[in-house]
Length: 216
Image 1: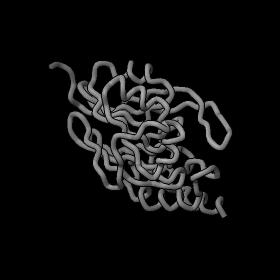
Image 2: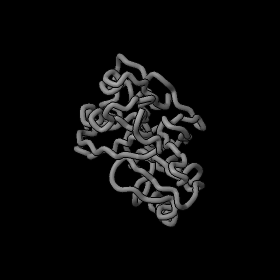
Image 3: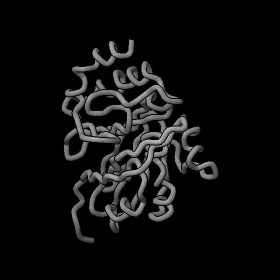
């Protein structure tokens, strides 16, 4: 078999609707492919399974991981899973959100805080349970090429925490999650977000006190 076994991160951007509490918004989602030339883990299969499958190519998909259960992060998961024959993993605290999209299908695997998601080609990502944006929101932390990275879903963005104020979300909870699980990571950790551009833990940590004041 030819090709590189060096781990890499590929970003695929898909567009579709986020729907919750009777409202709908068109959003661009980051779908992350983590692996090598032979295999890949998909993080947040959003909107368009054909676009994601094209980016995967002939690589083997070992897992489709959802950082949380909002429809715009899972609405391509089932079709993609059937297409590439891969299991879907979700934290069980987001079951109510999952069932809103897939009432007759269960996730294949349950994620838990501290669990390791094995990467093709070696290495792993550690599950960090970070509730607040949703009850079962998670981030995935690991070292790729010797550099620390975290896939933050909708828990942390460039410019602050993920949105709260809708059903199943809570601002003090997401602040506590970020403080305990993310701001304790190395400052140089690259944050691959669920929407928009990358940032780093160090860049975001300086504004934490402002986020707290904003919520008072």
